[in-house]
Image (cartoon, rainbow, N blue to C red; front, side, top):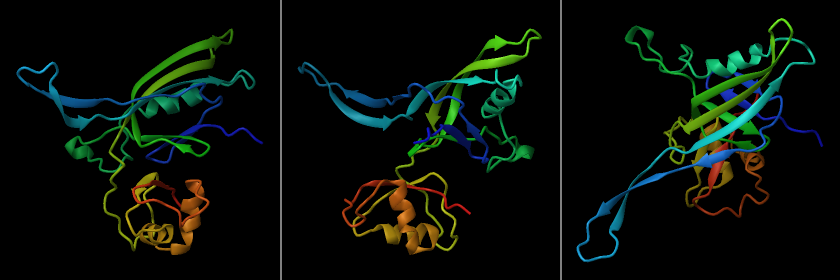
Length: 217
């Protein structure tokens, strides 16, 4: 079995493969609760306020000692994911409306939510005698870009699904109806089944969250 390499895919379709897969991924999420004063009680009753964005961190090694080519060819691409990009949807340079692109982390069947890079730390650890960096350690922190539990309305006639979309299965829905709505082709239910490791498409409970992959070709 070949080893599947992790990679980052940006909103602007820039794909950056990892040379070595991360050794670990660290996820965290916090929630905000309000405290209601309760005279005479030992502890206050808490009321849920809101959830905060999920965050995750990873560290990766990039090495070009075999080719002798500067590793900056890769690290520069990673750095560009942290600065504004005019190719990002919604950019209006005349009104100074711009932002860096969101990204998704992919590793085999694992795909993260859409996230923005909030921290980028780069350390060069090996150089040629002429000072060309050949090895780098990159640590990155990501924060969830949007709540993907609820997807925006889709145009059933567009035939183009939102890449990386997440859909919650409602009562009475099946994979073929979801495929027809998002792809305009009910026969593409197998694409959704394969992406989510589903063996029996009829044995799905309402409320299940499905990853909707982008059609290739």
